[in-house]
Image (cartoon, rainbow over all chains, first blue to last red):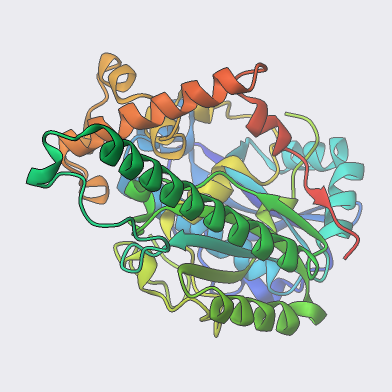
Amino acid sequence: MGETGRYLYVVTRDLDPAALVDLPGLGGGSLELVEYEGLLAVVSSVDLDEYGEEGLRANLENLDWLEGAARCHDAVVQAVAAVAPAAPLRLATICLDDDAVRLRLREWHAALVQILDRVQGRSEWSVKIFTDERRPPAPAHAGGSGPDDERPSGAAYLQRKKADTEARLAGETAALEVVEQVHETLAGYAEATRVLPAQDPRLTRHEGTMLHNGAYLVEAAREPDFVACVTRLVAAHPHVTIDLRGPWAPYSFAMLDQR
Amino acid sequence: MTEGAGATPSTRPYYATSPSRTAAPQPANLADILERILDKGIIIAGDIRINLLDIELLTIKIRLLIVSVDKAQEMGIDWWRNDPMLTTSEQGLADENRQLRERIEALEAADGSGRGTATEADEKPEARSG
């Protein structure tokens, strides 16, 4: 290994170091804690040939490398979040040594404490809503390109067009109403919510259209109610697919106000 | 690279999980993970300075909806042609992209303040007095 840097995964507090035993860091490095006034940064040493500016720029263009790094980073964050409040850091936050890590903890101390207070005892849940292509909610009446349509005659054509438009709008409106209702209902069980942009099917390989990509910060004590509520919503809205994931580290609720 | 215990392969269809399954904190798919570790979480400048937005792979994968295929091709980025993760017919991709661009234009036209509004509005968690 050439020169090394300290890769930061997550900031936490009151962490039992046993939680990190047997958990590998990037490149198999061992996880360590850097402390500053009650805050703990979970770090590991990384080779700057691989994680320096030049190396990173090249490696991040490699999907396999990116996926490996992303999953490792996430695994560390999740392991910490399972036992302690966690403020996950963005991928590829690297300092040259522990003093530089402590400097960051000192600089952002108040904001980090505030974030840890906000997420303590809470987890992030993801709820996505998809249209179900196999069971379209508002099946437009058949036709549209049959032989009869080639020479549409006045009134019939307009009438059909109007009906098509109405059916489409009704379908869209119904879907939006479902999204709104599901989100409002779940928000009642959450301490905070965020609506994230819909993901692209080429990334997720999901079928149908993603209508909603919501993140919900839920108290541990309310998780059973939240999950039960999702189950009820799944039953109440058979024409869409509601996908629940979690509990996750509170990524979407651990953000500093600055950039 | 090591994955978390019980990791599912990222190639598994996202959709395949039963809607209400919550038994274990199953690993997110790659899109979920990237969305969070690149777009969310704490941003603290380290000593190694790297602007993730300069990384075309990330820019395109994460911001697939706002970066046009044409622009990417101009920049010489065409990896998706061979990327099994993003296998889509070229025509389908072009069509979808055109539709998306039209939609973005329509949205921007409707909302005078233009692009970026959604992202900014998304910055702060919406407080709820649950």
